Length: 82
Image (cartoon, rainbow, N blue to C red; front, side, top):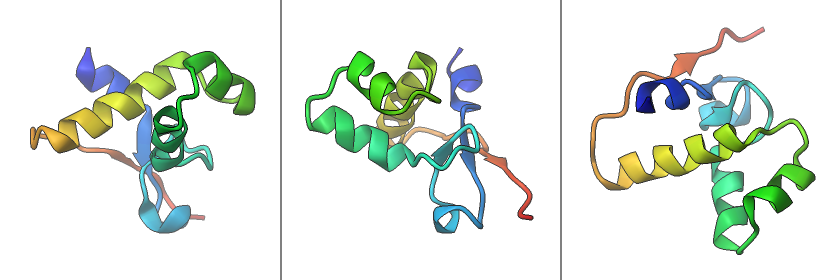
């Protein structure tokens, strides 16, 4: 299950210098985590970013948890530039 949800997090070297983004959209994982830190609910984030899905937000949280836990992060999908 974790592997599937993490597939929503991608990296594209030409978008935000390769920072993790959500499903190839120009929405950084970092931005979603910042909104959660500010106290926004999932519903409020989804209103602000209509292209997002609840699973995208959960993928961001899982990604952050795995980084903090120093666990293995499965390979991110690298998008082709251009």
